[in-house]
Structure formats: C-alpha cells, structure tokens
Length: 240
Image 1 (cartoon, rainbow, N blue to C red):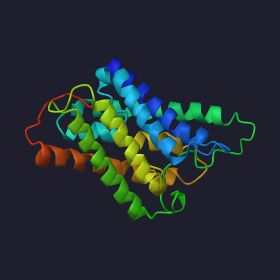
Image 2: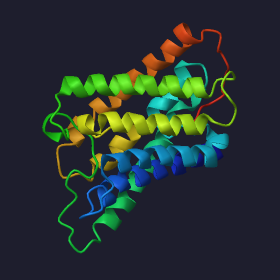
Image 3: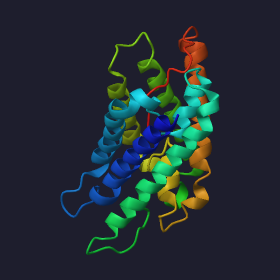
C-alpha cells in the first residue's frame, strides 16, 4: 500500500507540475508561447508518461475522480479510496508549491494571478456561467471515465491504455480550457487554488462536486449500459 500511495503522490505531482506548469510558465511566454494546444498536450503527456512509469504499481489514477469512478465500476477497492485521495491531494499541493517557487523567481514576476486555477463567471477564461462550467465538468469527466474503463478492459489491445487516456485528456483540455481552465481533477484544482490571487478557493467546491459526480456517472454508464459483464475486481486503471 505504501508503494501505491507514493506512486499516486509522484504521478499527481507530475500531472500538476507539468500541466499547470506549462500554463503558468510557457502558455503565454512573450512571443513563443505554447498556447491552449501546448497546455492541452502537456496535461495529456503527464498522464501518459506517469501511467507507463508507475501505473503498474498503483493503477495510475492521479485524480480523486478517477479513483472514485474506478471504485464505482468495480475496478478498485473502496477501502483504498481515502488514502489514494490523500496522496493525490498532497502531490498536487507539493507540485503547486514548487511551481510557485520557480515562477516567482522570474525577473518580471508581478504576482501569481490566476496561477492556472479553475473557475466560473469572472474566473472562467471565457466568462462562462456556473451552470455551463458545472455541465462541462460533469460531462467531460464522465467521458474520461468511459475512456479509462474501456481502454483498460480485457477486450482492449494490451499496452495501449496510457496512450488512449493521455490523448483523451488532451482532447478534454482542447474543448474546455476556455470554459473552466479544465479541471476534471479535484486534486489538480485544489493544489493551485491556494496560490492563486483570485477567488479560486471560494469556487473550489464545484471542482470537487462536478468531477466526482461525472466520474460516478461515467462508471455507471460503462458498467450497466456498455459492458455489464465487465466485473473485474481491483484491476485499477491509468488516469489523470
């Protein structure tokens, strides 16, 4: 269990440091910024690389919503859910702290600003309403769980799940960065929110509720509508 928790800690650390780091440090770099596409790829690549690196140890969740969805889908032990959540959130906090130290060392540092945090209304990159963000986060997390459960199913080609999951997360970011700055991951949202110089902490509840609800919905759709005979226990699945 200790090895699993360390794997989840480091996997979530890399997801937040790599994904949010690309947004904070490189997205709008003076003239050669990577933009939305680059940030989307960064998030997908963090999951893909860590799923191959430590997925065989912990299942490669790196996301409280993924852990919940896998438990609902019968692929993960409910008894391990809270320890996984703790390791994931701690990894996100440590990554956010390291990112803050690096970002604040820039010669032109003028404050953390939004610090890649998620939000709705005034804190949404595109000014999207709370209802719009809620729907987007629930829908996209549900689809993410279907991708995870499908690509890790015994029916799927072996060894390719991290690629499908990483590309799935990339696509999710390409769709929803303008809407909510893309969460689908409560740990990712929590880690950076406390460094942002906005009201991100006050809106954090939505980025726990919506991904958790969406993950449960996605798992139930897979379990009862798409593959009702897929009842493997404690298989685990790679995810954000």
